[in-house]
Length: 298
Length: 274
Image (cartoon, rainbow over all chains, first blue to last red; front, top):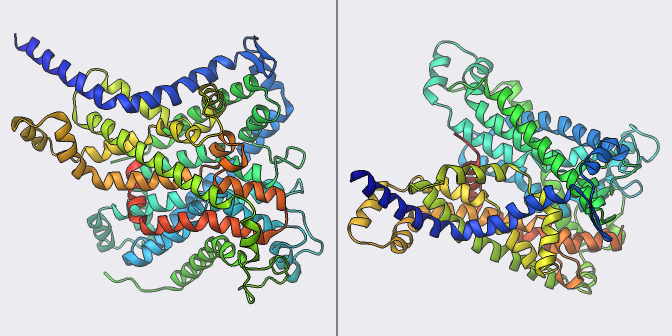
C-alpha cells in the first residue's frame, strides 16, 4: 500500500522532471547525440561528394598508415607535452603571487592573463602574425638589434621554428582559465593549517609543498585535463597562421581532420579521425584521473 | 604573522609585471594599430603609440559589410545566451532537486558528453544542419550550441543551493510546479544565470571553428570570421586588419570587464569537483 503510493509520487515527479528536461534533451539529442552517432557510423563508409560505400574499418586502417596523419599526431603530442607543464607551472606561479593581494590587484591580474582568451584567437593571431613577420615583424627586429641573430628568420615558415612559434601563442591563450581556478582554490586552503605550520617553524616553501600543494591536487588534475584536451584540439591558430605548413610541420590532428573534411571532402575519413581523436582524449583523461587521482588526499 | 619582503619577492614581482606586459600587448597593439596608417604599421622600430592617428583603416574596413558582421555576432551570441540560460536552468533545477527515474543515467550522459570535445562532431553536425536547410545561417551556430550540456551542468551546481524546505513549503501552500520554478527557483539561481549568460556569450563570440564551418556567404559572417577573411585578402595591410580586430575584440573585452565577477564564478563553479 505504502509502496504503491510512493511509486505514484515518484511517477508524478518523473513526469514533471522530464517536462522540465524536455527542451534540454531536445537540443542535446538532435545536436550532440545524433551527430555523434552519425560520426561513428559514417566513419565506416567511403563518404565523399560521389556518395557512400560501406568499407568497414578501411578508413581506420588507412589512417594509421597515412604518413601525414602520423606526422600530425606527433605534432599534436609535441604541443600537448610542451603546453601542459608550462601552463600548469605558469598558472601556479601567477596565482601564488596574486591570491593574497587585495581584491583589486587580484582581479587586475586575473583580467590581464585572461585578456588573450577574451580578445579571441582571430584578433590575437593578427598581432602575432605581425610579431613573427619575417620582414616587418618586431621579433626579428628585436633579436637583430640585440645581435642575437644576423639574418631574418621566417618564424612560421621555417621547419625548425614553426611549431614552437605556435606553441608560444597556444600557451598565452590557455593560461587564463587555470589561473582563475588556482586563485580560487588557493583561497580555499584552510588558514588554520597554514598558520599552524608557520607556528611550528615551517618556511614558505615547506608550507607550500606540505600544506597548500596537497589541497590543490584536485584543481591541478582538472587543469591538466582541460589543458590537454584544449591542446589536443589546437586548430584555429594553425588555420590562421600556417595552414599546417611548412611541409605539414604544424599540421595537428584537428587541422588534418578539417583539411580532409572541408578541402578534400572526404567526410568518412575525417569522421574516422574524429572518432580516434575522441577516443584518445577520453583515454588520456582517464589515465590522468587514475595517475593523479590516486595521490589526492582529503 | 607578517612576512618580510625578500629579494626573491621583488624578482618574482618584476617577472610577473613583465609577463603582464606581454599579455596586455596584443590587445594594446590592436587598439593602437587600428589608428595607424598602413606605412606606420610596418615601421621598424615600431611606433609605440600612433603619433598621427588616422581613420583611413576604418574607412577601408567599412567597404566590407563589417557592421553587418558585428550585428551577426551580437545576434548569434545574444540568442544563444538566452536559449542556453532558459533551457539549462530548467534542466539543472530538476537534476539537482527532484528524484526521478533515469536521473543518474541522464546526468552521467551529460557529464560524459561534456568531456568530449565538440570539435570532433563538427563534420557530422555540418552535414546535419545542411540537411535541415539552415547551413550558412545564424541558426546553424545557435541551435547546436544550445545542445551543449555545460550549461545544464553549471545550473545543476547552482541549483544545489536551493533549500529543499522552501520547495516543500511552496508545495504545501499549493504552488504549482511552474510557479515554484519562476518565483522560488529563479531568484535563487540568479547568480548562476548571470555566470552562464556571460560565459556563453563570450565563448560563442570567439568560437571561430564553429563559425568557419557553418558560415560561407560574405553577408552572413561573424566579425571574427570576417576579420579572418580580411586577413587572407589584405595579407600584410596590418592597418585594416587591426581595425577589424579592434571591432571584434573591443565589444567582447568590454563585456568581460563589466561582468568579470560573474564570469569567474562560471569558470570556478563549472570545474568538476566531486
